[in-house]
Each structure stands twice: as structure tokens, then as C-alpha cells.
Image (cartoon, rainbow, N blue to C red):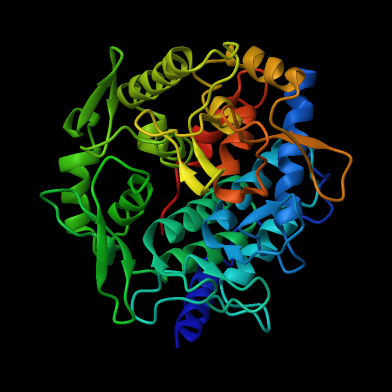
Length: 422
């Protein structure tokens, strides 16, 4: 039933878009602006290569690039990050087939690939967190997830903006967005709660209070003109102005939090790249800068490492997956992708990233490749190595390098995360 609704939406929007300009197959392939900084150029190339290794033949992205070679299911959020990575790869001139790949992926998640039917909530259309790479069936006993669906659609709408001459991407993007009842994720307007998961009947549970990465989902809900009254009220009360959000101070740096704990810094970086009101707000950028300063200070106070070793994020850890923060980083695990994610507001951090690379710390071999990438490592357990790099957490390595002033710059994200909602 869900698949039928999607196809009907596609047909109706395709009629409306029949006069849209479609990119000519005779048009020269994009080469993108050259990235003059050799270190950025090489690190970005290999960071993008990691996403290619997550991708299968029908355009579906695995949860992670596995250094140990073990297969994992698809992460729906990793698909969204992979789609943004394709836009970066095209603009930077690394992948002349990026547009074709993006369309292939969006078609798959629109239910238009034979044999692949992504598991979705039968009532409100939210996707399951993890699904089978080849069939789309539920994997790892996963939930219907609002944030994973939100990141997926952010990637789809980013592609709609970037590949603006492709009318099929545009119509499918609109259809996918409209196939989800975004208002169902709104919990309490008073507390700003967003439902994290849904049952089969579409009822939400496990509320997430601001501030968190669910700002992305709140933004998508606010812009759904079919039913956005409650979403608009929640946005106005909590996200429109960071002054309304709870705060904690770490060593003199005021940070926005969820009201209880300091947050892992991927939480503030994801909206920076994927949520236009955040990217363009000087007030939000100030808190992003505070998070960066706090991160640097935490590593200075809690380790004896060189000052280029910092970055407090999430990913594989000594005892399983962990989201590290100023409150809890038990094995002093460094996340280079977080260091990279701050580069647009802290360009000099590129020297830290290069020094980290030259130190040999956190280097991993990409499977089936001669290339290496920087990824998480533990100071207290130097014998530990990660088994892979999660596609969601890996994103800020790509985004941060791309948004450095000597690369594409943050204006690339400002332009294309200003989604043109249907």
C-alpha cells in the first residue's frame, strides 16, 4: 500500500514537473573547482572513497565501511549522508557519475527497484533504522526511526537542490518527502519533545528533548505545509532561537545541551551541515564555536597528548559503540571526524588534522584499497582498533573537509541545505 502511494505521488508530481529542464546527456561532465590544498584534496578523496565502499550495486549504503570485511545491513541515515557526499564528490570533481548514482539511490528508496522494498511504517511512512542491503527488509530488529528518516530525506532534498536540472530527482524527492507524515513526530510542544520511534500503528514513543540532532527532523516537520501547526509551535518555542535551549558551561564555554549532560559533538555538527536555519545563524555558530573550544580544552585538561589530538564524537569504542562527551569519554577516544567537522569555523584546525595524520595515530587501511583514512583511536587503550567507520558518524569528515575555506567552503552547504520543500 505504501509503495502504491509513493508511485501515485511520483506520477502526479512528474506531470507538474514535465516542463522542468532536464540535464542534457550531451552536457560536459562536471569537474568542479580545483582544490589547491593537496592535503585537503587527498583526505577528501579517500573520505569519499569510504562511502563508495559502503555502497552496493543498487545504490544502497551499508551501516559502515568495515575494516574487518564483515558485512552489515543498510543504515537509512547513512544513505542520507552518502547522498550529500555524492553532491560533494560531483562539485569537487571526484565523481563524474555522482548524479547517476544519486538518482539510482533515490529510486531505490522510492520503492522503484525490483526486489528492493525498504521497510516503512504502514501508517506514517517513517523508515526503519536498519534494513537489508538487497531486499529492504527489517534488519537487526530495528525500529521505525524519525531521525534516521530525517537524515535520509535531508540527503534526498540536498540532491534535489544540487542536481537542480534533473527533474526526475526533483519529482522523486518531493514524493518521498510527502510520503512521510512528519507531524507524527511532534511530541510535546511545551517541552520540545520529538518522538524517536513509532509502533506499527504509528504511535510515537521514546521522546527526545532539545537540544539534539532531532532539530533536523523538527525542521522537516515545520516545512510540511499539509500539517505543520504543532511543528511550527515547537520550532518557535525551542529551535528558532538558541537562547531558548538549555545550557551548561564547560570551563567557561557555554554549550547548548539536552538539559542534563554535555553532548557528543556530532550532535551539534549534524544540524550545522544539514539544517539551514542553524547554518545561517550567527547565534548558533557561536555555540558551535563554544563546543569546539570546549573540545580543545577537554583534551588539554584530561590527557598529556600533543595539542593536535582532539575531537569528541561517536563511533566504535573499546566496549562497543559509544557517544563520547565532556561528561563521559572513558577510554579517551579521539574522533578525527569531529576535528574535521569544526574546520569551517576553525580553519587552522587543518594543521592539527595534518599533524595527526603524520603522527600515524588513528590510521586505518580501507578494505581492498591502498588508501588509508583517519578514524577513532583510544589513548588509554592503544592496542584497540575500530572494526569499521559508521557511515553516519563518518559524514563530518567529508563535510568538514569540503567546507574548509580552501575547498568548497561553507557556502556550498548554505546554498544546498536551503531545501525547496514541496
